[in-house]
Length: 85
Image (tube, rainbow, N blue to C red; front, side, top):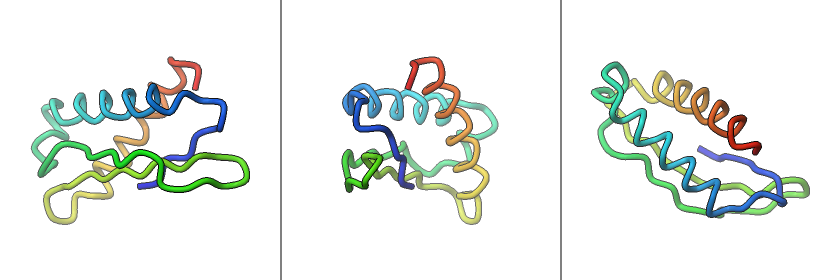
């Protein structure tokens, strides 16, 4: 997945939050068993006119990538909101 964040954000902090949310999802009783491995964050993948793109990957059980991915994004948005990102 591609996570876009503003240039003003501290990328190390963003990556830490992404990893934390991934770890929490992996420990979740509902979503954890659907994940085949921990979240992988590859750091900065690209730059656009208005955002830095951070590449990450969630490995899931077959055909569960959409369900897990949607929940990860929902939780990540909440974590970013709490962090002021």
